[in-house]
Image 1 (cartoon, rainbow, N blue to C red):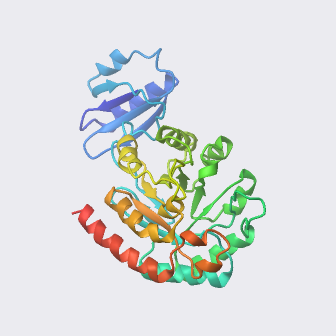
Image 2: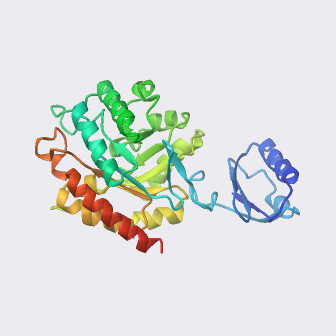
Length: 334
């Protein structure tokens, strides 16, 4: 249920209505826009006389929200959310370039790549310290050591970093991580999502390999219902019957998610395609589709990468892509 207030309502009257609704056992999410205030009501409103609420002098209209996701619903928050990712704004017209290797391997590697992508215009560094792998015999990351190397790269370059959390038990190691990533395989790890709802860090939530947009938004709801509203959605490709790419990049998800939710939406063309030569065209297509950022894998030596070298761009290739992204952004935002 949402309650839209009339423009220019006095603060005392607005707060009085909010307190009354809370006494009815409802959670009230307040979205103060430039021209109006929207109160999003979560809980069992069956016993509340909504006709009475709608008749109040300060209320413009009352309407029911039929979708199961509430906190991340654009009807609750008409204006775009801007997430501060380690001081970098994402969403609401702010575009973020995120780049770095799939896995942190050595200090020389991660610092070198961080310096290269920053010089090319990247805003955030990505790098995996904990890596979910299909095979138990594959390299699964440096773990705590990898996090420390990411901190070294941040100190060297000033770039905030994004890295994946796989297990609640490791959460304390992420105390000074700038953005916590929830990978595709963990999109429906509801215990993990609930715990992240109680932390004060931005969460980059990747769409699962076989999950719908509604399921992605319900996963975001788990985080936001716990009190953490700093969520960034990521489209990274879904499994289909495609046989020449790693996944199928669903770029229609970008405008659709923007229609359904106020959360920022970024795209990861590296994991979507699995092929370095396809990353630039799909990254540019994501920008044209209205994405709030792109996350691209960059490695200084892809042939010898310990993880996903086939989809990583070299630093000089990323520099060319970043320049093209900026040109497409000029067209999109004109």
